[in-house]
Image (cartoon, rainbow, N blue to C red; front, side, top):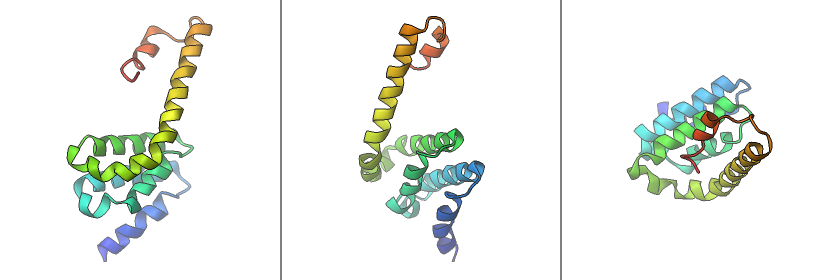
Length: 126
């Protein structure tokens, strides 16, 4: 019965009108995937993380990325994420590349807008 309830819970809460509820849901799904990977690290739950990567609220997107960091940080789980990365890699990568290109243009063409400390946070990523 509990597993049946947990199966339906993400569907309802990931669509909640409050971004705080969506963020908590994604954070918990990420924890469940790490702790109970056999039951929860499946496409039926990964889709919620994929969908909310495009949420209009920053807080929800950040929780998605943190959940994914936890999963990709565990070598034992990465093999089960191949289908997920195949679906979502291209879109996320292209947005990230364009964001860095935008920062470069701002740095070149708007003197003084970006400080060294702003750029330093991007260097490890690039």
